[in-house]
Length: 434
Ligand SMILES: C[S@@+](CC[C@H](N)C(=O)[O-])C[C@H]1O[C@@H](n2cnc3c(N)ncnc32)[C@H](O)[C@@H]1O
Picture 1 (cartoon, rainbow, N blue to C red):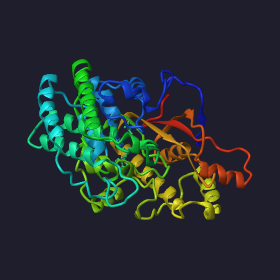
Picture 2 (cartoon, rainbow, N blue to C red; picture 1 turned 90 degrees about the vertical axis):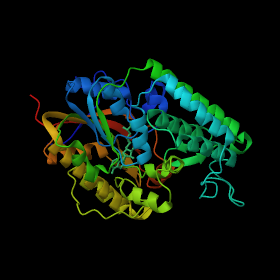
Picture 3 (tube, protein in one colour; picture 1 turned 60 degrees about the vertical axis):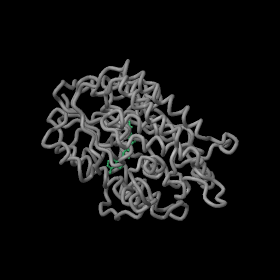
Picture 4 (cartoon, helix red, strand yellow; picture 1 turned 180 degrees about the vertical axis):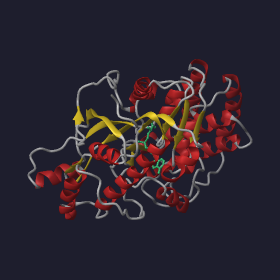
């Protein structure tokens, strides 16, 4: 069967209002750490309702990121398992599920605040671009910010339990609030006014207080997290089955990294070092090698598989023909490696699925050398080959434009119809629906 796109709401997706992360940015618990790559809690609600998941049934997210799926599902008392390779994001997901009495949080917060005010020299002061070193033109954090952060962090060292983790997340979040650079797609972009803003310990103190207030409000008001959850800090390609311990899932809602050369370990580098999840460039490199092969910034093992179905072959050939215009010669290899990894994940998911299970995968198409890669349709083809039944590939929105580089390439080649990238949901069933 040839996968096709559907544009209209179907019974499965009729209640889907949006898929991007923005509504989560203001929702209790979700807002404790905003991650732009997250998807909307509304999408999780739709999938859970569609699958009719009961209390003791398992919901799985193999690429759990900041924890949108477990935060939504556990609030409804559902059993959830999430896998996440990035230890900072796995910690974000776990922390968003914690409970502590607001009074206890505030008690510990005042010790941390005293540490922030006292400040301590930070091990990051002379490391890489973290702070001003010599006559470097740019640095991520002003020294006074790093010292305030370190003072707060040291104050958490003797603490135990959920309050410590919540306060550590607030410290990391506050540091990022007063970082000289902000996340911008694939990279960190320096704020245009970072020099004049001149963030200092007082800016950090204010940011920390705001974050603690938000967490406290949500602990008071948001529903208690009820369902059993486990977040596994693992590479899904090798660790998913062991993590499920023989259980099978009823629903999998997930969004793998997009095929857009975006390396999450790079963009979350400040948080990884601030939170002491990695302590050296070697450790960062080792972590990068465990991520899905959706970027070219590290030399991973070359893929072996070449055939990923009818939508893959013509597009891949066209990109190879444009090899000389690609910004990195390993891009064709990356495209194959990405689909090889996705094949492995879909194969494992099939073994872990209940007979009436379904899978919702949110993805976007990508473009290289001006050629659009229909990632959604290729994933649907792979899934069918792996024995899944395709219910639909529902296009949810079009992304307005391609990166400037790619538009220029299209212009040079006088291509009239320039692709708009799209985001879609691929819905699969373990057993054919009647
Ligand atoms: C699109 S994001 C998922 C965002 C998530 N849906 C949310 O709401 O926050 C994809 C995630 O996959 C993770 N990832 C990449 N390679 C992985 C691997 N090999 N195993 C597990 N997770 C991986 C990335 O770190 C990233 O957090």
